[in-house]
Image 1 (cartoon, rainbow, N blue to C red):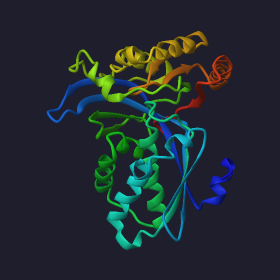
Image 2: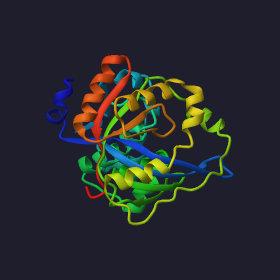
Image 3: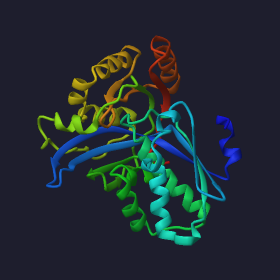
Length: 298
């Protein structure tokens, strides 16, 4: 299927925006093993795309730079799990559907690709099927798919606490010009958490009355990602790629989620695009994407 033809070929399309952890503080661990987190999250205007079309029987197809990496997942893919969970809610009225996933984001890379895909599936299928769920019921269903899926349903700047289910919108977070960078080397999230030396770190504390890009940059700079040091132990390329972003003029760099994607915040989109092009020239085998994040007032 031609990449450009997704919108034309499918009646309903949804964007699955990349999720960026501007800050991630590990504040504890529950008795069931889940870690407690405080996260400042925003979403980029780049990501995967999904198309939905009525069909005689259920079908799932893939394209995009990273589509082949998901080809053998079958029923374990979060898109199909989201489809099946939602169908349980609607029963026979949920007719068969052809879902196409254009996989543009690296897989298992700390920017919520699979979770965003699942959230986009929920949104897209409710539109296609002409049905809806109460907000609380939809959030509960999303949480069954993964801790990041409820925030990906929002796809706007927010603070997430607990295991990710306690969500608070951040209306005054501005948009940022950004470069996403990934060495295309996987990071095992359980191993990152296992290597944490301290799991009861200070909570995320945001000053009141913060405004403007400069003010928010200072706030983000004062925060941290507690998963970055252990991830760097596992994948030394994270340190390399962060230094590459700094060398190209990033005002601030940090790893997102459990890695290995890092982001660099730039003064404007022209500088971000110039940096991404230069970095791609240096390492064409890695992933570099200039993007702009959404603002809290979207």
